[in-house]
Length: 123
Image 1 (cartoon, rainbow, N blue to C red):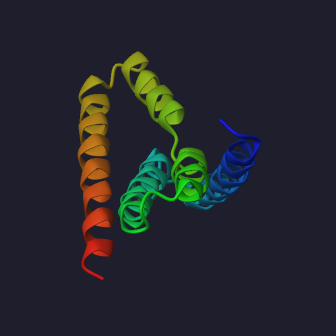
Image 2: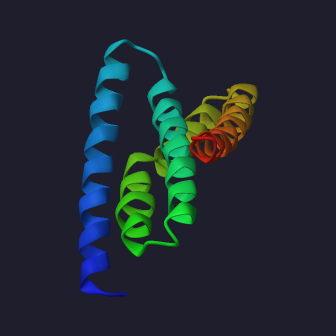
């Protein structure tokens, strides 16, 4: 791991984290419970698919991997918040809601990665 790769991850992660925070504040201000986590994870997954396809097209350019995939998408997505939201639902006895939220999140995010990958492939 080089110093340059660390800087790229730092920059991408910072931008992704700030964007996640801003989106969460805007969505949560409209009182949609748990929607902000789902939305940022779907967006991060979709962009991940695009960046993975771009990485394939550009013969594995390392800066894309560090800046956009590891940094930006890693900073934008939030598995820890997703996990804590599920724990809260389980502690409140909302088991069916927690299971539904988990399954929906995983399914939609996997489809989003695939769509991002396919969309860039066709352009």
